[in-house]
Image 1 (cartoon, rainbow, N blue to C red):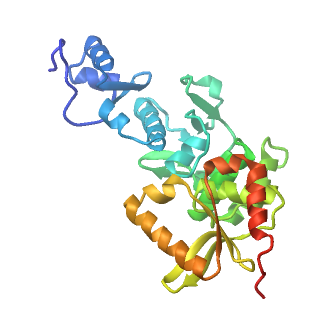
Image 2 (image 1 turned 60 degrees about the vertical axis):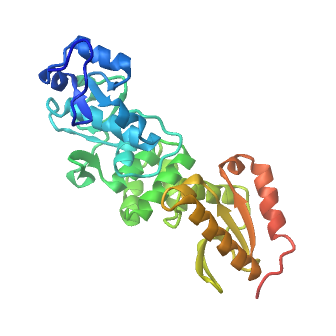
Image 3 (image 1 turned 180 degrees about the vertical axis):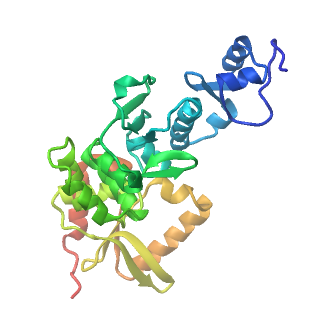
Length: 314
């Protein structure tokens, strides 16, 4: 049993309910001391996480931990009639999200007012079938298609487009999504859903690429080809966007592109080699970052200047 004066957390485990800590011998005073000392973090009422685990996680992983905390707190009392939905389901499917809060979304058959939920929970009751529910890490979650549809009917157009692009890239059935859109006349958010589905492109590899494509179209710039493959003397390459006839490439330089998969120095070195080889083949590069997407006049001028005067290949 831990000491009341200087309690230590259990050597194993990372997430606990209050009753689980109590069973391990931690009284309310010990739990309070652990919270005050920074060893324990309260994720929501009655559920805690080891602080060292919480501090080591990215914002995306922290958002998923909040969902798992909700599940751990309700698993023994829930009737099993709800599923995680909307942006919560998107997080569990590992879909890209942009500027979305950590509210936990539940889809259930009964009226939300008949059950008590925390202030961090939003309940929805739009009808659903068994085919629209899957199991991910032992949690009931709306399917990839239902998740993309629900997000598209709740979020803004650009937020929804990011989700839909990624859902299609992960294998969501576009025909099934179209059938959903066709069946929801008059529903709130249906116009956004249909517009997003019409413009979604599974070739987008990141939120930044999705927003770049959306901005190009919204500014009336002639659309480039996404994920365009080209060769140089050092091999085959793929460009984020390309205007083939002008040999203009637009690359979105987000941090994820350089920092997630390979050592940074090696990635940057290979990127320089690629650009040098393609420049020698006549390609002109326009590089944009997140901040450039929100200076639309400057973005448009840069792209149009790059395209202007470039000889168009036959």
